[in-house]
Length: 156
Image (cartoon, rainbow, N blue to C red; front, side, top):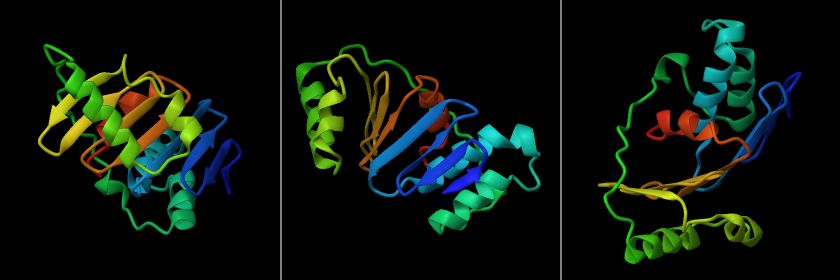
């Protein structure tokens, strides 16, 4: 569904021509995270009172969310001292638990990704993907800066 001249919303993600950004998710529902990202992208253009692309995406996805709920969170990621083989294996196992197309899973490089431990589970950050192990969600994107956008809103 077109929500703005450049913004296309689909069942598990969005593609934006204005910012040349495409984000898809697999696993559990992550639409609230994507809504927060859309709001952040478009609020400088539309203002914060009524962000049309955000409202359109909310309606398409059937998600109730107020702009006041969109508060970025600082996760304070600190690199672990060592990335061990068991940690990499655990990250790979986590990826296998998430329902996603095999060609996408095979394209992800877990070996060179950053892996963080949280009490909710692992957070695996690669060049073009992010895995939230606590919620069992895989985000796949085309621009590395999408990582920072997603990380701010992972706890939605």
